[in-house]
Length: 101
Image (cartoon, rainbow, N blue to C red):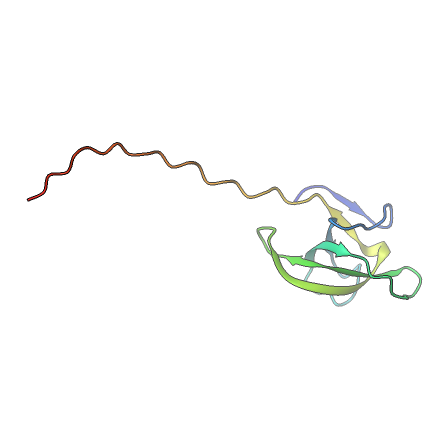
């Protein structure tokens, strides 16, 4: 994935892709990537926030929807993954008459 911006330098918004590591919460022993859907307006401790989003698989596809409690200071913003390449158009094969019999 592309460039990174770390910490609370910017606000989290829908569509952001975040790399969540142990710096965001101890639950991320195995780091994950998440595309943010929304930020619930739930009461939290200072410096923490709730995020609803999709955990992303290795190809950038949504794997599972999750609700996560994370520290703002531990967030790492990622550039969105590049869209998958479209398959090339298939060439038509010229076909002649078919002999039967």
